[in-house]
Each structure stands twice: as structure tokens, then as C-alpha cells.
Amino acid sequence: EGFPGAFYQGFKQFYRSLLEPGARRDYADFAVGARDMELCEAAFQSAYSGQWVGV
Image (cartoon, rainbow, N blue to C red; front, side):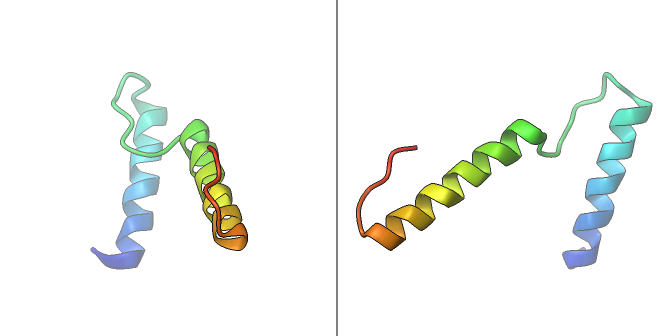
């Protein structure tokens, strides 16, 4: 589907979860997004310092 299709599918899944609360969620929630940000920050710090960074 390409780049535009990814947004379509993401919104489709989100709205489905609103209409069907028991449906499986196939998209990232806040906790997953926050964890991804922690990983990105650690990767940046590691690249900047040239050392391993704990996560």
C-alpha cells in the first residue's frame, strides 16, 4: 500500500478499536511509543558518546 496506505490502515485499526472494544489492537499504544522513544534516545546518546548506554 505504500506510505499513504500505512496511515489509512493505522486509522482504520484505531477506529475499529473504538467501535469494537474487545478487538485485538494491532497498533502501538502510548507505552510502546514511550519505549521506542527511550530506545531512540539511548541510540543517540551512544552514538554521541561512542559508548554503550543502558536502557
